[in-house]
Length: 213
Ligand code: SF4
Image (cartoon, rainbow, N blue to C red):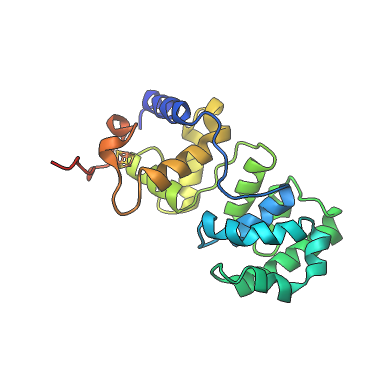
């Protein structure tokens, strides 16, 4: 995509939603980290249903460890892969207490060293909790990056690297959310809403959907 079109694309996405936020509910950097770990292969709405009651009684690593793996597992059992996730939540909480003074580190390597935390989760935490201009590539951003021609790539890391190069500095902070929301609600996986899409004329996707006759 041409540079001028990338500018225009983000101008339009930012006009639609000037201050986008994650749809995951959280109270502090720690609960954001836990929510993102729980959100792998699950919907934000499903995660929020479970974390509401969970965070009401445990919003620090100490409280989570005191709650214990069995209780955490019970409280998140509506979320996919909950057994493993409960294990990771307790283990990462322990690691935060032992190695980081119970605080969430503002450091990619330290975040990725936590149980259950990969590059995508680290990017979300760095962006949403600390305001860093990182872009976490999930399934929605991967699709939008490829379809539009903004950041074509075979792997999420390819797409992330291309986005970091292509997105103008002034849009980097919120690019992650604009692209996720665009993918989730407009450029949907099965049937993108191309006739209603604000960036239709800038998008390179060859199989754009048409308005019903
Ligand atoms: S025109 Fe269609 S394919 Fe392109 S970004 Fe919009 S919804 Fe997605």
